[in-house]
Image (cartoon, rainbow, N blue to C red):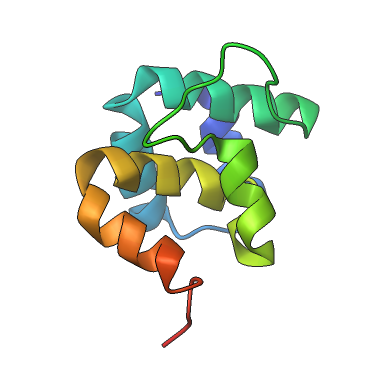
Length: 98
């Protein structure tokens, strides 16, 4: 378990059950986890050799909506890998809130 990520989630008051689920997702995608850790520590996205899924990077996703900056961009990268149809639908629908 990444102490950097765990501390981040505790600082932003994420519920413990959700922390466990989010960390589990990140652990399945070590490359995305590494970039997320970089973002937490530097508050900026890696600009070279970035993780790209379906032509999207975390930074590109963050530019699409104010709700996707930071952690949300990395979670959406994971969703693009694990469930690309659902993720692409969310992106094309403009991240509409229900």
